[in-house]
Length: 149
Image (cartoon, rainbow, N blue to C red):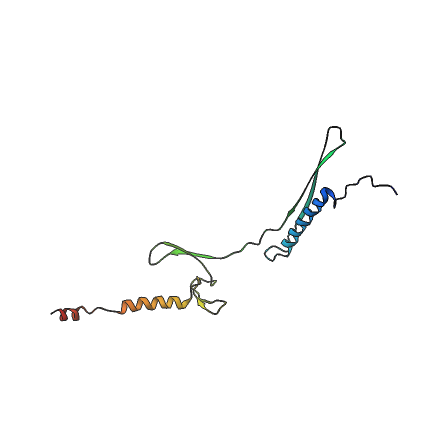
């Protein structure tokens, strides 16, 4: 049996370094394919490029091997924002719309009723009650005047 004329086995080039690089890129592509945050049907690519540079008398050839992959990008994530002016300060305010419809409340995953921006209704009601308590304490100036006399 005669020897092979071209004895350049891909699995043993550079003491197996090319195969290691190939395996690493294949793993990267496989991880990208099973990632639920990427498009399942997008094509991925693994490229092995060998650049051969012979010397002047063509008897020795330097071989540079590159292995790279092209993977699918992460899927985009969308949301909706609301913009306006803060009624108290007049400054620009921006919040993410969490309820789906401006001004609509919703029930969060933990069962909490929240505003369209995700603030629990209980917090808003507590703040309003605190303001009401402060404003309901009327000062009777006539009674104070009588006490002074």
